[in-house]
Length: 142
Image (cartoon, rainbow, N blue to C red):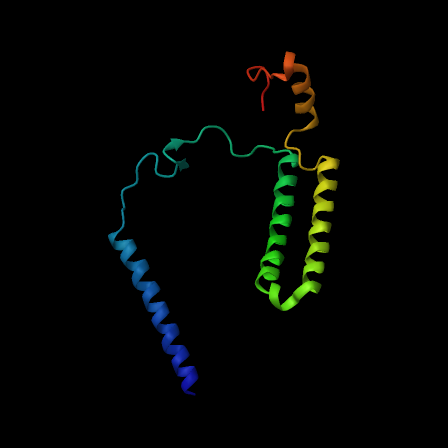
């Protein structure tokens, strides 16, 4: 029964602290409402336009692939911590693991999954490229 009593005392203390904090912020907080109070505002710049715009999937694919390959580093850290205990068997296993990761990265690079530009942007870039491979950035919109 003493465990339940301690739990109820703890719960009552948490609720009391939350109630006091909310009450103080209500009474001591700012109550004046101005014209631009509810306007979205970020970094000192008033937002212009709509936040609802379409983004191509070509942006998300490299981000997702980065997260996948970034999570593989966790396995490398775990191996690095236990390298002495695993010995040569662990070294061979991590070498196979890194080989598979490199093969997957090479495959994704060859397929074009790591490209940031869409096909339309690459076509425009080929059209705008001048002599010596120099791109006129004024004409090419990223």
